[in-house]
Every structure is written in structure tokens, then in C-alpha cells.
Image 1 (cartoon, rainbow, N blue to C red):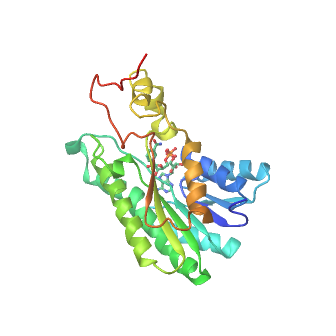
Image 2: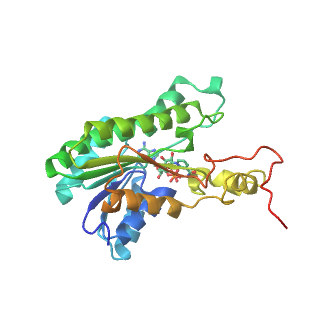
Image 3: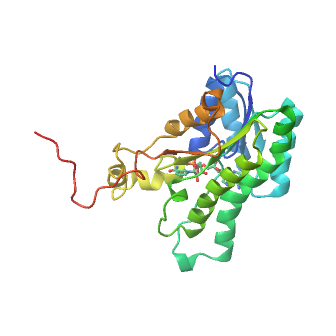
Length: 261
Ligand SMILES: NC(=O)c1ccc[n+]([C@@H]2O[C@H](COP(=O)([O-])OP(=O)(O)OC[C@H]3O[C@@H](n4cnc5c(N)ncnc54)[C@H](O)[C@@H]3O)[C@@H](O)[C@H]2O)c1
């Protein structure tokens, strides 16, 4: 078991990718704190984990609120006296035209997707430094690397996540606390359910990456276990893209690889 007895907080832990990370961490022996703004769902996920034999608990938090983010870390420390892993997974996306984005839309995207990881990390880092070890994983996106239409706030925030990851890793040099980003592509979680199931985008978008399918939350969970474990002890300030090669290579319209019959 690669995460035996490590205490892990997963924000947005009752969403599609969050649940998969919580389950994978529990399977590797971690003590899992399922945190979400949706307290009822977080409780349900923690219940399911306990029923499968894991040590799990639910803690409510709105990561975009300073007091709430700090209360999450305090609550975890009160209960378990340490936090080894923080996964800043909570996220949300507004899809609207550029000029339709209100100031409040913009601020909401930055608050949840970028300020949230900053606030939760800032609260936990002194404890990780004091205990001499720790691991932070931030959820970026393909939108961290490339512009996407109708998502200016989300793209700006997720691009910022890469910078935040690198800056925190630099600040934590020599402290045995690593910080990395996971950048998912199109994952068929509730976040993208409407696109995955729609006739005009479901199959078409699956065919856009080199693997030829939608990603699943479990595809992300494997990378989270790797980054949280000592297997990745030389990976720091870095990012793992899990997007079926969507960012790595593209064909132009009508251009297909030539293979002999
Ligand atoms: N699904 C994808 O295709 C995809 C692609 C790229 C990046 N991501 C990123 O992965 C992460 C997880 O996405 P998902 O697919 O599981 O989405 P999801 O919508 O299924 O889950 C997101 C979770 O975050 C919670 N949340 C939202 N605002 C919050 C807040 N202020 N405080 C605390 N919790 C809050 C929600 O209640 C929900 O449980 C997000 O950061 C998302 O941006 C997802």
C-alpha cells in the first residue's frame, strides 16, 4: 500500500474526479477526508468509503472563502493531528461568451479555481513544514495550456494554477513538501456529462484525442496516487497531462495517418 496511514484531504471530494481520487487513496491505505461545499454528498461519499473498510470522514468547506478553507485544515488537524496530502480538486466552470462574462462570473472563476487552492495550501503548509513532509496536488486542465472559447475566467484561473504550483514548489524548496499539477482533458464526470452524452459532442469529442475515447475519473485517480506517493519523489513543481494526447498532437481536417493495408 503506497499511502498507508497518510492523512489526505480531497476538496471537491464528492464530485466525479474527487470520488475516484478518494477511492484510490483509500485503496492505497490512506485516511481520507472528503471535503466539499456539498456537505450531504461529502457525507455520502465518506459513508461509502467507511462501508468498504476505509478510515474516512467528511468535512464541509467552501474553498473560495478564507475562513472556510482555514476551518477545513483546522478540522482535519483536530481530528487526525496531521495532514500528509492535500488535493486541491474543487472546481467549477462558467461557459459564456467573453463579453457576457460579468465581473461576478470572472471573480467566481478565479475564487473557486485559483484562490481556493491558494487558501487551502496556505493553511496547511505551515503544518506540513513543521512535520517535515507533505504533498500538494492541484487540479489544472487542458485549459491551463491552451485557450478555449467561452471560458475566459476558467481558462485564466486554470492557467494560473500552473504558476501557483510552480511558485509554491519554489517557496517550499528543501522542506520535503512537493507541489504538482494534474491537468485533465475531457473526463466524463458530472462536470462534462452534458457534452459526453450529447449526440453532437459525445462521439465527436472522443475522437479528437489520440486515444479515441472520453477519459474516466479513474484515469485521473491513478496519477493522483502516483504524485501523492514516494514513487514520484523527484517530481516537483511539475504537471501531468491526462488528456489522451489532445494537447500533444493534432491532425488537420481530413488528415489521417497513412498505414499500409
Ligand atoms: N471533468 C473534466 O473533464 C475536467 C477537465 C479538466 C479539469 N477538470 C478539473 O477537475 C476538477 C474536478 O472536476 P470534476 O470533473 O470532478 O467536476 P465535478 O463538477 O464532478 O466536481 C466538482 C466538485 O467541486 C465541488 N465544488 C465546487 N465549488 C466548490 C467550492 N467553492 N468549495 C468546495 N467544493 C466545491 C462541487 O460540489 C463538486 O463536488 C475541477 O477542478 C475541474 O476544473 C475537470
